[in-house]
Length: 191
Image (tube, rainbow, N blue to C red; front, side, top):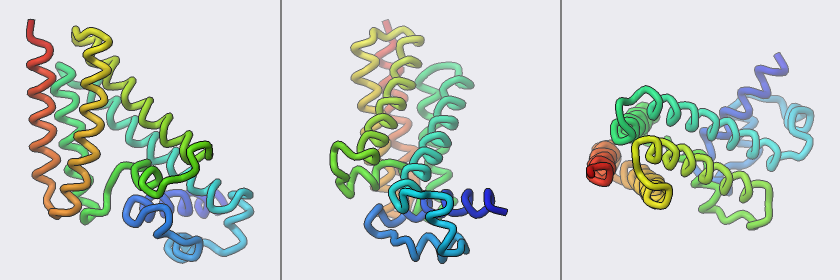
């Protein structure tokens, strides 16, 4: 039961932060939505909200990384892997009622102290995703410099597409941007 409470608190925190941002979520919100007793917070997360948020971010990043890895590894080309990941993000956005988003962007937007564990975790997450894209692109034949530049473009494009889709309440933007990025990758890989 304790593990269930802990897991519920982590998943609830991740979902609420994606929808409302770090400062838009109170401990009371988390406890109420996860049906967790107040005493369980400091039992499971001795550092309070910061520890809970860090675990929620890490869980979200692990899930996003798993899906990205699966898309890139199962595709016939890096372009198709990226397209598949954007399509997965579009499905998730629609299924969530337009509450889905990047697991770290809301934290970055709420500007944590640049030396905080939250800021370091966010930076490391983006670095991990850039490396995943870069490695797939290098394996597809691009130079490391070109692959790094495209990896940054992919992430920036996805983050923007997620925001637009939430604003427009339409996932078309995500799939369109994914198609454009895939075409950009295909063009970059042509001899």
